[in-house]
Image (cartoon, rainbow, N blue to C red; front, side, top):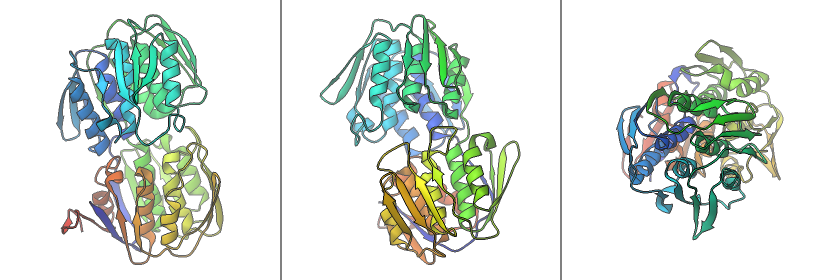
Length: 425
């Protein structure tokens, strides 16, 4: 099992380019099965979750061809409408094929996402929305099953804004008869990117990026080409990497408008941030100040940046309170940060962080994708060596993170299994 080893204490300097957004690429890939014709996607990140989605589309019968950061998908005829547990258990986003399958092929069987009770993340909102669109929905033997001769338009109110729920229902509504209105929709930029792609294919969507999305159903979608938007979470991660090491980093190929919440908090912590059309430069000349952070749905502070910001607050001056208001059980990285000397107390959905001068390197274990990034950032700022295990979590969503950090001057290397060092060093 791969590990990443970091020798901390070196300020990062230089330019780094972000990859395409995993959280945009996944629903866009799922949506390719809504119609015939070839769909050609560029700027697709080469990460494990994208690979898994490609395997799932292939199992359904789509033709999937990858070359570098370019993927072409043809789904004129599928041979299956079932997303099996073996794949879904490794990636929750597999549930995104549910809406497209039932909308175009009249049926779908998708394994319940592994590792989560149905109420933990609101998959129930996907199901209630599909029922509103006229599907017969049931849960049998661990699978969500949905059937409909043809979906019909409806007004759907989401009890809470859910990104995958909004995407699933927006995709399904593209082929429904009549108009669908999704109220209290999630507003994330990745939803806008999906809507742009679907519109290129002939869908009629209005309001993506607001809390009310309207979709006029059409009879069929055709193929299209699309460039996936840049990854705002990856961009934010490299900005915090610059801040936590007292560095001078320019993040290129990003959209600063997507980063307003994280940029505001970084400026509040005392670092200098300048923006232009497609890059953000961060310069840290002093120890950061503690700031309070509360995760919220977009355009608030992203829950996917919480672990990285907590790592920064571990070395900041003063006491900060980090409130996780999006997902429960997202402080699993706290005990690992404590192993590095961090002073953190968790009280329900609040983590109280008493900033210390220096973290110390230690063996730590990643528990999820963003926790992995947070631990790597902590290692960059720590005295001595930090060894992060279970980095397969990291590979789900970051493309070559160790190579990109190495390019900024980090002393970082990947160890393949129990063998020798591979890649950077």
